[in-house]
Image 1 (cartoon, rainbow, N blue to C red):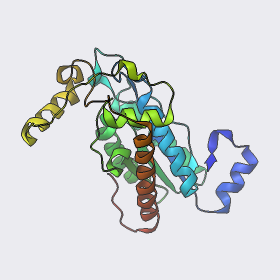
Image 2: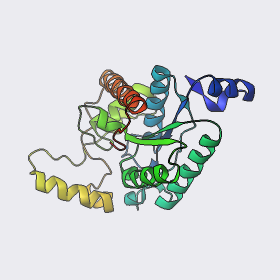
Image 3: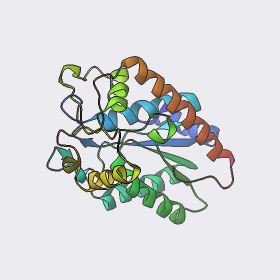
Length: 244
């Protein structure tokens, strides 16, 4: 693993020149995660996953973009940037990486509300930078069997595996979709994408009370293994899928 921010310039230039390098940009968010998880949860998890992926695949690891598109959580706490701001930042970073000899960029997303923005960015970047650099966007929860949630069993287990900031004594059940039809769940998801508090009053989607560190470690292992396989496919396939 090469952590870019920790490198000395001469060493970094040699590393990039030595072989075709791929870089990872983790993108998170700062927003409420119920009464028991820190507001940095999305950024913390995606940083951990990106670090593990970088170790396994020997990719360059860039600093995590901590802020995302989280306006849907208002009036719960959120520090959000506009979709256009996030897209512009990433495009300019990719331009800069390209000028430094980087040929491939993997953007790893850690916040559900970023998906639409990042998919639009990927299409824009690949059109703008065609022939210079390839950009791929992946949301990490698409590489695990568990259904994703928000401050529920999955996210809480992941945080237990990587952080000592979880306050399990404060964990409370939130919105659960057991027994609901596909149509009802889809309607709730649309509501949550516009106003999360209207979908779940305590800011939790799922039930975190039975979350465990052991399960969180299993999830991270699964995610990183599947992500590495996908990234390697992107490096060798002439026409890989750009989003997932």
